[in-house]
Picture: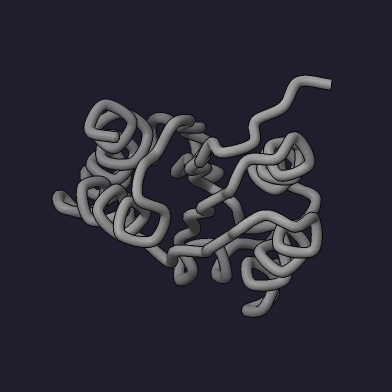
Amino acid sequence: MYSLANRVALVTGVTRRQGIGAAVSMALARAGADVGTAYYGPYDRAMTWGVTDSEPEEIVNELRATGVRAQGFEMDLGEPDGPSFLFQQARERFGHIDILVNNAVYSNETTVEKLSTSDLDRHYAVNLRAVILL
């Protein structure tokens, strides 16, 4: 097995225990990496996925149970300063970042014809701008 000991990973979009972000975070932790997770609480809790308020914290606790350092960051990557603030917070906590997994996504269930300008702006902010800035 490949070792990621002494490495630090930052994974965005870690909200649901059954989600891709949680699975990637756990795989990184099992390989020995310390893991910072980022989630957007207000949006995720509003979705129909059945996410509980405690789920992101439970994921962090599961990561810590593997013996690595882990920290969750509730962050709105759609805000102009969100990505830089997340990176700053993660570096303050861990000292450096070696691995970045851009897993966060803004999605809404509607047709293109029904997308509002604010929906388009949010798609751009989270799905493109945040990825580039991180």
